[in-house]
Image (cartoon, rainbow, N blue to C red; front, top):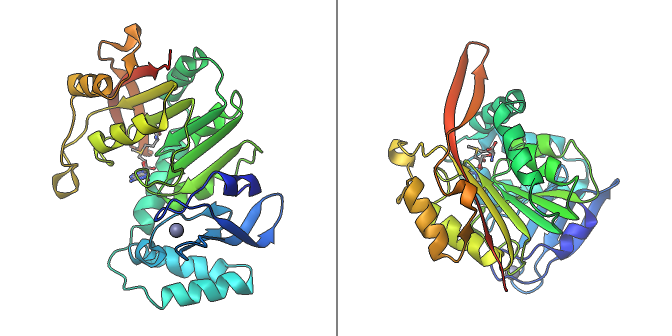
Length: 292
Ligand SMILES: C[S@@+](CC[C@H](N)C(=O)[O-])C[C@H]1O[C@@H](n2cnc3c(N)ncnc32)[C@H](O)[C@@H]1O
Ligand SMILES: [Zn+2]
């Protein structure tokens, strides 16, 4: 985590500023703790990734294998003892480690999909931004690209495995935060550009739109989705179709670019393994809000 990121992050419980206690610093913070002096919540920074979960033990309880590995690979005694005490409170209920690792690999193998170059072209047509946020950034394909033309770019994702890969590309204006996109990790910070690609199946769509609409008072929102909502027990409660997505964006004060008023069918091919590819056709919307 870049040291300067401390100034952007807020406590996800009480929205207060955080204090950094760095245990190991290289060109950025490798291990450390962010502490909320007000509500006393602490957020560990492990392998350069700040884990902004309101309950760290709860995050680990769904990632048994990752928990053991984090403990084994901790560098400093301070982090080892922090992890030991967090692990002593964990009741393991699930192990998402391998699922998250598998998807991180799929995105690595699919990063040359034409989809990303098409989105890059669309982003290049927008004015340069100061502050950018990507929700559900995974391995950071677009986040890294946006860092070339923006002053500061953040990616949020809840997969440690994906962010560990994203963190391999260092830039002094690019950083990643492990958090739930809907949490107030940036509190009232306003962004010039927010992007959210293919995450409506995983994050309650209306809540995401409401959340993003509060993060932009004057700026752009780029959102894409394949509307693949049929996921049984894991489905979101209120899926949105291509028309409902547009209508709701307008309700939240966004103006949709004329060229994305009609739904599109952009190919997005994910290489699952050498013999199987998932071929989506993705809709893209570019919208903006302006104060004038
Ligand atoms: C289908 S992938 C899309 C990845 C990337 N946006 C792309 O289009 O290549 C969804 C990503 O959202 C992340 N994710 C799911 N729920 C999330 C949440 N509540 N908060 C933050 N990230 C989340 C997943 O870990 C995953 O990396
Ligand atoms: Zn707090």
